[in-house]
Image (cartoon, rainbow, N blue to C red; front, side, top):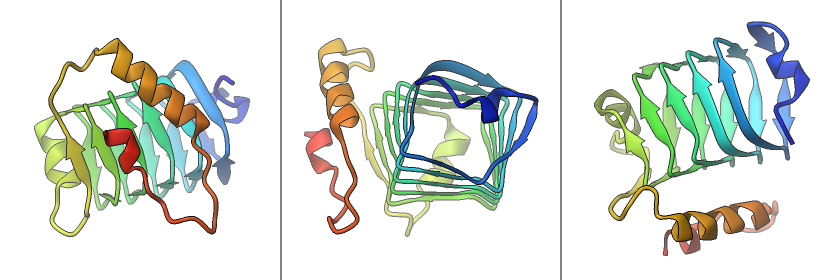
Length: 162
């Protein structure tokens, strides 16, 4: 599935919920995501360029090979999200945080790492190996695609890191 039309129509967007979607292979530039909940959604090969995430919440989302370039996170909460082979470049963070999230084989600029690695946020960072290891990337992609959240099940994603 490509990006829902409600996001790409126009440069500023306000929507309430994107949930249980799979968004693949698209470039999202110069939009404002304001007051939104992105939940239980998989993003694969998506580039966010010069986007503003304002007063939004990203929870239980999967990001595989995504790029965040020049994005601004303002009053935005990121909780229980997993990022694999993704990049954060020249992003700004204002009163925003990420908690209990996994960053596996990601490239993260120093400023973003400072905000993501704050004590108490309980984020996990897995580094090493080749960023473009295609076999590992395919294995993670298949696990992310098959991943289903169940409300009664504890959120455990450690098998992706193995």
